Length: 253
Ligand SMILES: Nc1ncnc2c1ncn2[C@@H]1O[C@H](COP(=O)(O)OP(=O)(O)OP(=O)(O)O)[C@@H](O)[C@H]1O
Ligand SMILES: [Mg+2]
Image (cartoon, rainbow, N blue to C red; front, side):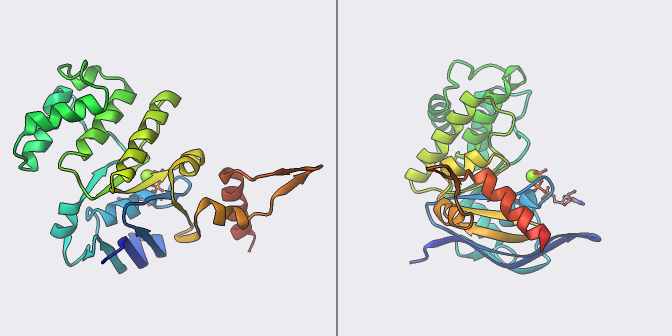
């Protein structure tokens, strides 16, 4: 039984002169939540695009759901779904129409039923028949994630799923991500919010200067960073402190 949903080895990618990925290695277990952290421009979206077959790697091996992305992109596409960094909803259509469109594109048998179920699950039933141009940012994001769940993909990529959301919508999205993972879906997410990774991720990887410079569970990452002692109270470092310390340490070398 294949237990890895994603296996990446020696992944390199350049845009002309700019080498963004210089040899990226990581693995993601089936059914787990994996968070890729990194600063602006670190290459997170580039990794997501390669994993979801939108972009070709220059070198290295990348397998998703047991299929090589370069050799078997169609097999990969059938198993995955992507919610990009920028919402992909069609503003002229209503929420329901957007979902029905995707369900039809995916050749599902009962597109209306699929749409209504997802609208309900994402609290969008009341807004279902409104054009999405009238939706708030949070509602759009919810619709965006709902659209990526049409057809029950085994692996879902969420590129900064909560950027621009208010705290309530963010917590709601976290709930959905946890439910997905509880249901056996593998979730690969990128985020700039370190708290998000702390809340959600089974494993975390930090992408910096083209490589994964640290990876593991939150507990393992915490061990890389000795707890600061404040008088008699032991202070646990936040992921933010760990992140900054790791990046800072690397730059000093
Ligand atoms: N199509 C492209 N052509 C040229 N350069 C690109 C292209 N796409 C991305 N880049 C550059 O590659 C680097 C990595 O970009 P990428 O979008 O993967 O980063 P990111 O980690 O997702 O950043 P952010 O947190 O801002 O979303 C950046 O320097 C970016 O300017
Ligand atoms: Mg990005």
